[in-house]
Image (cartoon, rainbow, N blue to C red; front, side, top):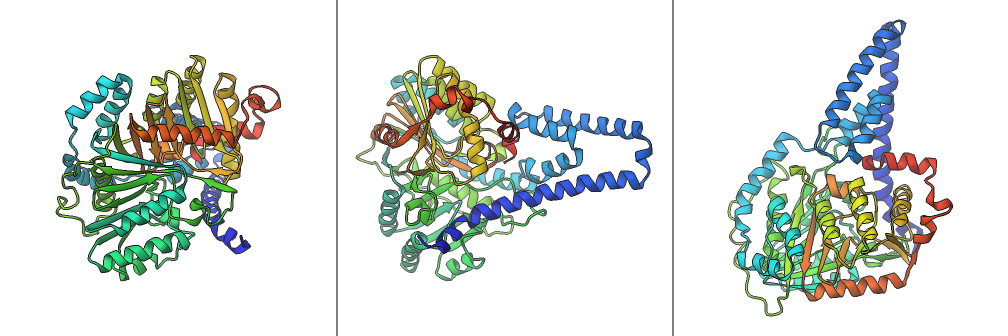
Length: 522
């Protein structure tokens, strides 16, 4: 691979890192400015007054954070910053600590949901059938229905792809079969080989009269496409919208990004998984060794839920867009699927409702595990609650295993990920690193019965700040296929459990302690 290719692929990480560095520098300058102001106004001659005012302000801020309905792991870093560096803490909190949602944004999403969610109705027969087959799986499913309103479906066929390149080829085939509409929503779209092949198919279908829509996140794609990308698609007959365009310091919605990966064809076929529309995900280029990613294809009733999730984002992104008036043409009745097996429950997670659905689903699966539970994630930056659930399951005799990358895409995040190994390993959780390269898949399988596959990383950003999607699977062949893929992947991993259970790797170094403390801010 040429040096220019590597440079292009690393632009996104570099720019994102620079942006966060700019935020920190601004916050520090504000702190210095506050000290200069104190000196110039003469307050430095009255240290008791200054100390009292600082304590009162810090106490009020700490009480405000403490009263929030958040996990303690997310509160502690802000409390420390407020107490030690008030100006830095306040500045960073305003820039990256808030959920980012404004009252107007929440209103737009609420209006979209009010129009769309009535199209999702739970089939009582499917719910009863899963409860009879496995009550513990049913409990996880009922939680999803209650908290996110996405129903459990029985009339759906699922295909699992252990390699994103296989998913891409299946996706192209499905796109070529489109008769009515195509919806695509991705965090990252890179204007390179993989996307260009997709774009040609989309343009051909648009010329045939198929309605084609593309929706991407500006932050996730800003370094790998030109500013005129959306205009170019529009000229080719492809409708395009951009989620949350980057306006640093002016855009208070900056912290929430659209991390979903969805393709929908005619409301009958849908794809999701860990992969974006960029060459590295399909190993066309390889900046971090072999890239491991996975995906699933849905056909049938559950695609309606996926379509609702797409339409929600499309119609809520901006107030001045011309939104849909009629949804029925996209949400018709699903045709029976001969190969349907088991149960499928697509669900979307949103920071708008302040409910950590993605994390709660993972913890619910850990709690129900009897024999084993396996996770695959690119980042392992978890709350104390999640860590305790994993360790408790391992101490109860459940075979708990986690696969993380062997080659990092972000070195600092990699160090934070490794800082969690020791506590988990000491209680029996087995840790594997994917030796061939970078593992980007986000999935979980347990007891040959239940599994999830989607976009939700085991880190704070995915679990608390981003728009994500996942798919709960129970009693289908796809669950067995995912288990088989885990077993094959373990063979090319290096198990590091013993190394982090005892010895010098078991002790957290000072740098790791600091990184761990502020992991929720990354």
